[in-house]
Length: 127
Image (cartoon, rainbow, N blue to C red; front, side, top):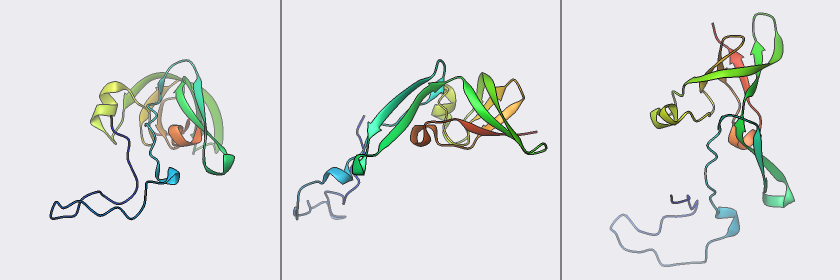
């Protein structure tokens, strides 16, 4: 799998190669995607720019569910993965991203957080 280089493309529209003005920079680095799945909690810590830490969620079996009718948030266990409207391949593989739908003990929940970026699973109860 190729990781995205977030700089200018190497070729012009005509197909000619761009003359290199400089080398690639570390801040233009792309990283492998985090395919978050349902399972025993597993996180990965990554050092990012400025020495900060980004937590990537690899697997989790609990989600913080917000109930809009009661206005409360409860931690609920994920029973099973239902769908991921953002990508049909993610739906087939059971990958949790923002917008994915899972079934919990409380009912159907739509994931509202970005588990690969935030390191936590938050969701909203859908009727």
